[in-house]
Length: 368
Image (cartoon, rainbow, N blue to C red):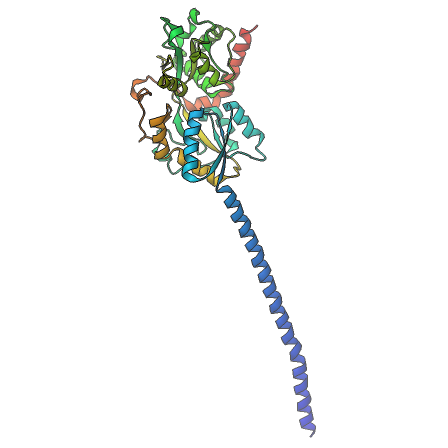
């Protein structure tokens, strides 16, 4: 009897101790399950947030551009039609759009900067994202640095009003020193205008016989400034419009707007300086911290695609840099133009500020 009671008590104790353990395990499992569900919900929220961000990026792009309206429209309108991405365009001079990117560096509002050549804004490389398009290998000018894709080319030229020029010889930089042209030359500000800067660089290399900082080069600059007779236009458009409308006889500019005037039947002509023209690449870059980074990459890819380059070459007066693109009849064939062979893009990038500061000094001295 004693033995039976002992066994029964032991059994009761065993059952009594074991039940709470079972309940604890169950509670733990429930807690784990709740934690899993909470984690899953957080992950789902994060995925949803990422999807919303991606979705918002998928149909938006902001482009800061200093290019001509015709080129902006051709490239951007076709890009929108082919991709469904909505593009907001912000225009200004090269100097203006670069300053805008600088001012927004801590909180970027734009995605693309499409302005001057690499030499014009290589000193601002910290403002851009590194990106080399898969299409880059098809271009005449490669993206060597990783930050500047050369989509098109803007040779330095003169625009000449045929009626005003009459029999005056205007074939090269030396001719611009002719006293008959005093006050009749349209020229911009090389500090803020990419076209004016490239024309100045072309003249320095040509008139300095390959040495842009030589006395001969800057002797020409001093005489050229004197012949400007106080003319200093604040935008590239005022240069070619001023000549086309008869306010000036000749202007220093890039090829596109002049060739377009010729196509329209305006009484002007394109003159490539006989000493040698520059063919700088027109760069496009992705702004660092671009809100719509993937769309910015798509834009760069599209701009140098065969479809876009061929369209521009056949329909506009801008030179595409994709090797397979054809030129229309209004653009002089590449092999018929004398180039400035001594031009050193790396040197220009490193000495841009020195050149513009020296030009400004000469300009200020001429006004005293």
